[in-house]
Image (cartoon, rainbow, N blue to C red; front, side, top):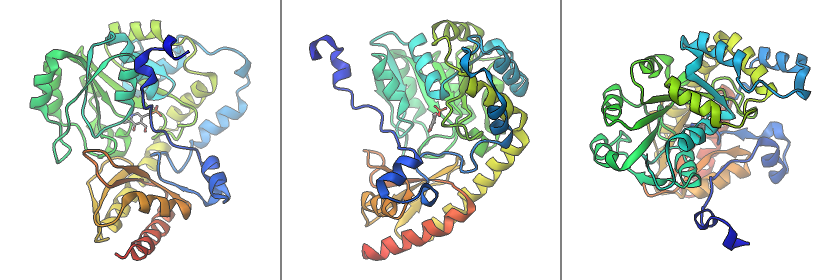
Length: 364
Ligand SMILES: Cc1ncc(COP(=O)(O)O)c(C=O)c1O
C-alpha cells in the first residue's frame, strides 16, 4: 500500500493539533467545568447569544447549504465595506489557507514561511506539494524583510499572520508595502486582529493592491471555533477561482446561520474582545512579575512566555495535571516557551497560583 501513496506524504509529520475540553477532562478524570483551557486561543465567552438563538430556531439542516454563500458574502460585504465578489468563505480560515495555496502554488513552487508562526502555513504547503522557504523572523520577532526580498524570486506566495501566532506582534505597514512590491501573493492572516483593534487591519488596502489577500475568522472574535467559519478578501479574479475550486458546500448551514447572527451582534462581540484584551494585559503583567518567566508584548488573545531555569514541558504537564492547559513550544527559535491564551478574568488567579506552586516544586 505504501508504494501507492505520495512518498512525501508518508514522511509528513502532520499538524500538532489540540484536544477539546471534554477529551481533556476525560483524560484527567475531572468534570469539564474544571478545565481551564488556555491552549487554543479560543474565546472563553463562547458564541454570542444571538448566534446560539439563531442556531436553535434554524430548521433547514437537512438541506445542502448555498454553494455561492450569497447571504453571508453580502452581509460580510456590508460589514467590511467590501464588494461581496472579493469575499470567499470556508471551513475556518484554515480552509482559505489551503484554497489560496492550491489556487496559486503548483507542486514544487516556493512558499515563504516566517517562523516562528502558525503551523498551518508549512502544513498546507507540504500537503499541496509546495516547497517551504523558511525566512526566520529576527530576535524581536519582526520580519527580516531584506531576506524575504532575496527569497522572493524563487517563490509564488508568502503567508504572514498579523498579529502573529505565537509571538503576538503586528505586521507593520512599511513591511507590507515592501512585500507587496516583490509581486508575490501576500496573504495576511488577521485571525486575531479584533484583539489588537481593527484599525490595524490591512483590509483597506485590498482595492489598491491586487496581490494582497486578507484572511479573517469567526473562531476567535465570534467564539465559533467549533463550527468552522472563516473568510478571505482578495482580488475578484482570485476570489472567483477560489469559488470554483472550493468544496461546493464548504460553508455549512449551521456556520452560515451563526455567522449572520454574529455579524448582527458585532457590538457585543467587540465588547468581549476588549474584555479579553484586558485579561491578556493583566495576565501578562502578573506573569512578568515571576522571576523565571519572560513575557513578550502581545496584542492578540494570548501571551508568549520564555521560561528560564525550569523545563517548560514539565511546567506545562504540571499545569495540565491541575486542569490548566497551555501550549508548549520547543523549536529552534522558541526553546522552552509556553503560550498562554487569555481566558476569563477569574482564570488569572488560579493560573498564577499554580505557576507559583510549580515554581516552588521545581526549586524556583
Ligand atoms: C494565525 C492563525 N490563523 C488561522 C487560525 C485558524 O483559524 P480557523 O479556526 O478560522 O481555521 C489560527 C488558529 O489558531 C491562527 O492562529
